[in-house]
Length: 145
Length: 145
DNA sequence: CAATAATTTTTTGAGAGTCAAAGTATAAGC
DNA sequence: GCTTATACTTTGACTCTCAAAAAATTATTG
Image (cartoon, rainbow over all chains, first blue to last red):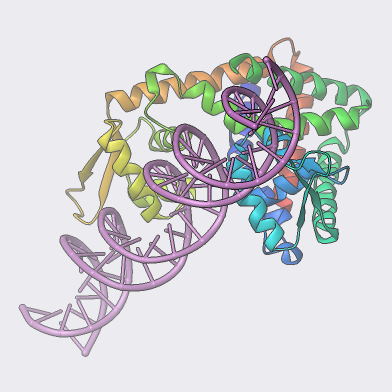
């Protein structure tokens, strides 16, 4: 099998399986009541200042109506807090509760370990090659956008 | 921004967007009536001998019931043909129609161009580095499985 | 060889995720 | 103050998914 086929296999299989594997890795005993989708919403809300529904919906590329339904569940489960903006009472500001922040950290840990897993045993020079290849991939995808 | 952050950004953003971008790239004017999911089923059926429902469902890691529903649509839309096996009349053999084969080629083209996009401007030595990094990533994910 | 068990697929019922469009509440502009 | 715009929620419909029940066929076995 030549390099072309190896890369092709790795790309296609990784992409097809990545979501499932990530879900299994992230949705542990401690966070059994949330889905992979919920975790991505938690990651998008983040641990900074509260964000509006529109802001988070845009960053996730879903409609605000879709986000409303997901946030209903996350509020019910105690991961997210809803609050009306004082400055503009049309705006709903969402933020993570303590439980939400804990899930956020769990997700971040996974990402950090993932990057460490990729970079292990690679020299600085080799890492630059990897950045180049991934940038190529990103550009390829964006050229189709 | 150091290499760690660059890799982290590329990995996380690519994974989050890859499915959407692939969908936009593959579901063109010519193949407007199918979803990304449909295309993965078409890829799994392939252009070889007809395959049973169970075989295809296993290769996609979905239940046979789920596949039945998807195949109903693909047959209705003219991409897939259903036929009872002569040898064992319980078995349903599915294969691609001409239209299905055309969609399959379109999908294959995309994958080929994707790999070319990644490998362009990389030397053989650099490609080996990429293989190493992607193998690390694969192993990282599988260690969580 | 007839009754029972196993296999393959389809159907059904339910839940999550999604969008578009309609509805509600508040803010901004004239 | 009316009208228009904005932010969000609700509703209805669709896809994807699974588990479990049902249907058809094949295999086993007593």
